[in-house]
Structure formats: C-alpha cells, structure tokens
Length: 226
Image (cartoon, rainbow, N blue to C red; front, top):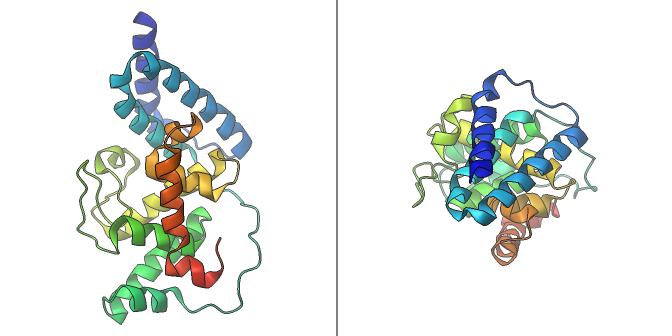
C-alpha cells in the first residue's frame, strides 16, 4: 500500500507542476514518457481499482498540458472542393446559417491549431452533443465536445464557452493521436473510453462502436474520411 500511495503522490505533484512545465516538442519523447506513466497507473489500479477514475482524469490532463502543435504527416488526398463545413452543419443540424458558420469557424480554427482533420472534429462534436452547447452528461462533461470542466480550468479553458470547449476537444484528440502512433481510430477510441483503457487493451467494443459512429457522420463520409 505504501508503494501505491507514493505513486499517487507523484502523479498529483506532476499535475500541480503542470503550469510550470514546458510542453514537449518532440512527439517521440512525449509518447515514451506518457506510455511509462500509463503503465504505472495501470499497475496501480489493478491492485486498487478505486483509484482508476481519478488517475484516468489526472493522466488525461497531464498529457493535454504537454502537447503543442506537431507537424502531422500529410493526409491522403481529399476529394476536390468539398462543400464548406458550415453548409454541411446547416443541412444536417438545422440551426440557421449564422449559427452553422459560427460552429464551422470554431471547429476549423481548433482543427488548424492542433492539426486535427476538421471533418473528424466536426463528427466528434456531432456525436458527442449534436452541436448543442448546453449539454451536460451524467458524469459532468459539458459542451459540444463533452469535457469535464474541473480538469480543464487549470489549463485556462472555460468549457462553458463553446469555442474553447471545441478547442480543448481538438487538443485532446491531437494528444491521443500522437500517443497512438499517428492512428486516428485509436485516438477516437481513447476519446470515448479513456486513453489508459485503450493502452491497456480495454474498452475495445465500445471504442469500435464510437469509431463507427464517427466514420458514418456526414462530414466524414462526404469528405472521404480522414
């Protein structure tokens, strides 16, 4: 038990130091460090299952705070001149042209900042919240990207502001993408069931269902995937 407590204390200290920690700029180094943290937390809650929820959230926050923009590998060629994203949003989620353009601006800005395909980010927002800004889940996740505000206030995000909520969602997806060796399907599974579960072989059925829902979203289908 003393070893478990010492590991938990180390994890908490890491989070407390987050604001003073310079982001990792080399994705290979970041992935190696994070894999070690994930393995340590997995070993810990195998013996103490009650630690899983808080550790999952701590690791997620820690990873998000480490990553800035990486130069992702270029994606495969996309269909020429797809319809504007706001046009697709307005068609499938009736909300008025002005509101659809606002959502498209939030999504495209966040996607560019964190090198996430905009159609993938739009699909995540669609599946998570149906483009509603006032959604709150049973576990306290809020907003278009369904994130928990208590774990993001330390990074300066106001998740009750939809543009910041979407930007935080893009940051999480980007972090998971690099931790998953540049695999968007893996990143999506992690977004749904938790990165630690994915890295330790759990949540595969639920994660695959989530990936399937994202893949079938109109934004992704029309633009030829990611």
